[in-house]
Image 1 (cartoon, rainbow, N blue to C red):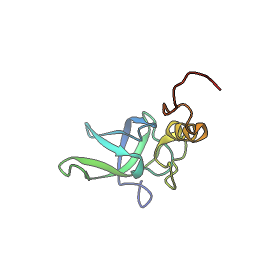
Image 2 (image 1 turned 90 degrees about the vertical axis):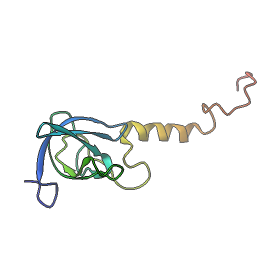
Image 3 (image 1 turned 135 degrees about the vertical axis):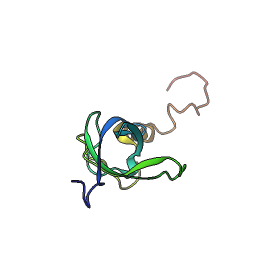
Image 4 (image 1 turned 45 degrees about the horizontal axis):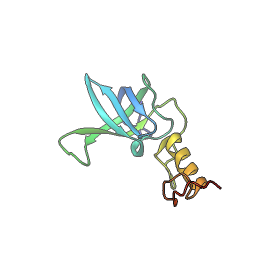
Length: 115
């Protein structure tokens, strides 16, 4: 079913954290790591049926991880440009810190005199 769009295996999303950009897929009684950079289409949600491939992990080749993940029922994942892969909450915090500029970052003079 996955074919060229997604991987050849089918599993179920165990959980996915949008703010951290990773989660796990249950497949054949095991849980496998997935990262936002390897997901196309919608954000995976718990219980979603996902298509994916299993490959040796980049950081730890002895552990298998998921690539070419498709089938998430959540919001579309933006893979391009700055802020991609941080999830909506991460993008919101990035924008808020940009809007606030130096205020609220703890780098002021601390004189306590207000505006």
